[in-house]
Every structure is written in C-alpha cells, then in structure tokens.
Length: 228
Image (cartoon, rainbow, N blue to C red; front, top):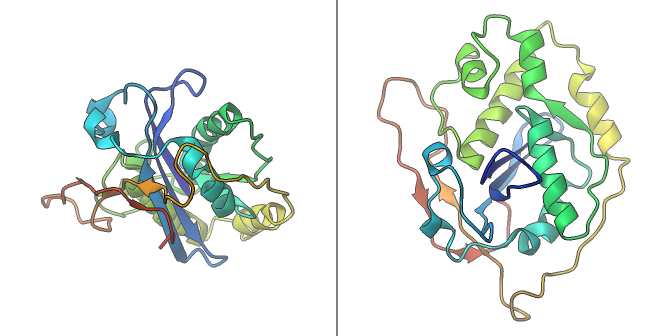
C-alpha cells in the first residue's frame, strides 16, 4: 500500500514531499509501516491541501536517501493505492531522476475496485469511497493516513460477495516474479550516519464522524531503521 503527497500535480515538474508504505501480508493483515516527509529541494507546494509547511521538511531526507530502503520494501509486492497510477507515476519519476528504472510492478487500484463493488458511493475519490464503506473519518492528505485507510478500503472491497477471489491473488503471484534492483547508500551524508526520517504522526484511524479529529504532529527526525 503506497501513498504520496507531492508539491504539485505533475510527476514531471513536481516532487514527492511525503511518502508512506503500509505492508500487508497475503491475508491483507498489516505487517509494518514506513513513512517520512521528504525534502523536495524547493517549495513544498499546496500547503492548503497537504498541510505540509516549509519548516516541516527541514532536516527531512531527500528521495535518494530513502530510495534503497524503498526498493527493499516494494520488492515482490503489489503496488496498491487509490488511483494508484498517480502514485506510480510520481515514484517512477523520482526513481528516474536518480537513474534507477522502476520495474514493471503489478498494480491494484482501490478506485477501480470501488467502482465495481461500491455502487452506493456518491463518488470515487478516496473520501467518498471511505464514507460509502462505512470506515469513518481519517486524516486525509497525509500519506500515512491515506495509505492506512486505503488498506481498510481494500479489505472491504475484496470481502464483498461481488469481488472475484483472484482480484488480489493474481497480482500477488505476478509480483513475486518481478526482479528488483538494489541500490547503494546515498553519499549525501557521512559514512555511518543514519538517514533521518521525519514522520507526520496521527493516531491510528479511521474514527467515527462528528468527533474532534486528532491533531497531525510532525515528529523530530529519527533514524531510518525498522518499518514497524
């Protein structure tokens, strides 16, 4: 499960400013999480949408610095997202900028699943699909919040009677056969110095509508290590 927030809408002209990965096992149970703000080496873009301020990315890693870990996390996995082609396009361009071609990873789009299996939805944006599935409030436009609720939406969609059982199983088998590159550590930091992660922390959701949503807090930079 992958979600990105970006400095704009164009993968060619804009950069990823936050990324989150939620790992699921074959039964769609959460295994681990990885999330960080990224230094886009320029303006952070539409703060009114993603609520990321320029000061939030001070000390955050560059994409190249987390790219080796990201490749490890995505290897053998299905790339799942809501309108996943958008997330894929931004990842593809970020990897291309550092000279790493992204493998032809199998993709599964929860928007496509929702169109087929959530006929009661008033629309097919993430918020409308989450509402139709009865999943409650979530911290929209935070990469980790969107990734977590997309995982919930995936579980909901594949669990309805109208969903064929191979919608998830077939891409998973394909993913296991895709060869993935490996990437050495970035040289932007002294040898042995850990790559800091700057994570926007939100209490795990979704939450029932109508209540006061929890605040989004930017954590102090912490070393990149376990995905948990």
